[in-house]
Length: 453
Ligand SMILES: [Zn+2]
Image (cartoon, rainbow, N blue to C red; front, side, top):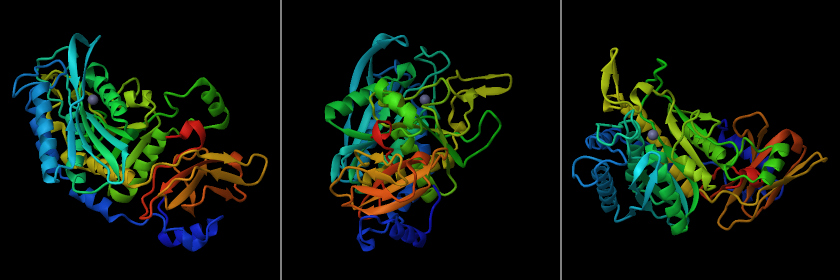
């Protein structure tokens, strides 16, 4: 969406108040100094230190050595765990570290293999059961996915994602956040997205209400194999319709729309809005797909469980560096080595993640029970459920072909509906967000089953 000047916002909100007195509504969208502080605190040197350590374990293949103190996935896991513990010591024990695991066999894991995630939990101050997750995968591979012994540095795929989530933990641990944030270094991604499943199962056992997963996989390279050098763009992939949509829901959605407004898609829009506002010189390229064409990532087990999730990935990939044995062939150096990581770029992507986690955690829970009505009338009524602690609601609408929310009106927290006079229901898509007293706004929720979180 375009940023609107505060004075204009005030005029819009006064003009749009259908139910509440103008002075009852808090000023929408104040600038959040905490988010600027968070963005500024992200360090490219910290990211470089983390990836240097991770590459130093030789290979982090899921079936690699777990006993060696210096080589393999076991040593890498223990190092991540020790880093989370150190971050926690620096914040008075604000992180609880867990190591959920399950044993899998499968086409890419012929022997029963323990897949363990390293998970740090920063408990929310006022809304601890609501959880925002950031994930990346610790495991690495070469061209032969079964090769558990050759060097597989995985500097970009996906030490970059793990470095981003660990740096987010370091920075956000200095802040009090209202909802819980979970930082999770997953394993088993390359062997079949096993670590994502382990975390989803762990979330169920813990009773977490997961609002979103931000999966960061391949986020550190700015030079594409297509010859483009672009350090100012990051892609955010989001599914269009829910993986868990039922045939009856699909029938209604096909008729009335909603194929562009899954909660994951509105999380992507939320991220794009924050990048415009809080991360200078970083543009989000939203991609309306679950993942890259024919490829997968750890956001998929979340989606399969009905949990909103997006994949964050660099804008231009270099395939000579992914899933390759280290070698030089035809003058090209193949392999995922650390010299392919652009640390200032990775810092930008990390800023976007940290800002998103904090903004989402401090905003209220996304609205529930959103619905619209008004067919064969000139007006549209947007309704939602009352929610304690919400200071205001923002009703959004956009043209049906527009990628971002375009128009909005703000109403006070005790309202549960807004009538949009002379806004014809047929011609627009609608949504609602919830706003806290200090102006943190939740992602927008599209009405009905297609959009519910
Ligand atoms: Zn990956």
